[in-house]
Length: 202
Image (tube, rainbow, N blue to C red; front, side):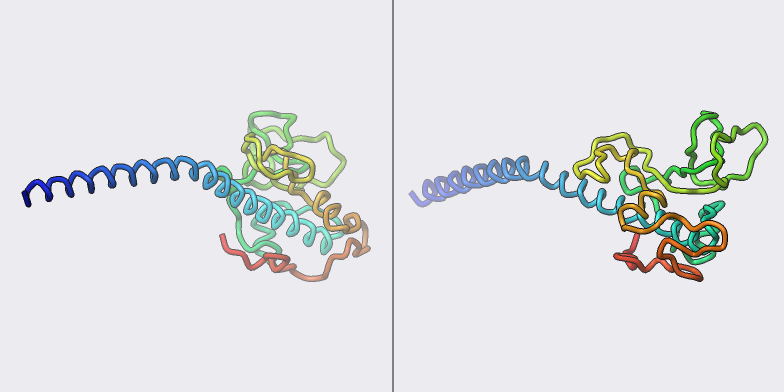
């Protein structure tokens, strides 16, 4: 009799365990899309932060150098306009550089390339269809995926413009200085990476 009771208790516990596991599986299946969406939103927040760090650094460099764009990212870092070379959090890879005179070894008419300076190399093509000084004016993500957020009226990552001109427009700043003028709300000296959220880690 006692043995039968133990067997019944064991069977009941097994059924209860199976029911609990089924409920947990259903809950996890329902929660997974929400977790993925939250993770994507966090990556998008990081993309905006990092992209705007580049744009801000270029703006500060222009303000100090009469509107001239920086020749490369190392210049922005060595002169303390940019803390480090940020990775694109969406792809985990380098951002693409944008600017007149940027080298393109695959598409001669393209004005984007992975991290590099605008110095010509043998066998490479250079965009010369601009009257602007050669240099870096912004960065882009290489991802063509659709985003959750809408940034500057765009909902595709590689169309999110992180450049000096867009940054000035978003933040209500004047145009880049020219000649000997120091316009655009810039400051003299190296602009350290301490804007809104500037202390954020990688």
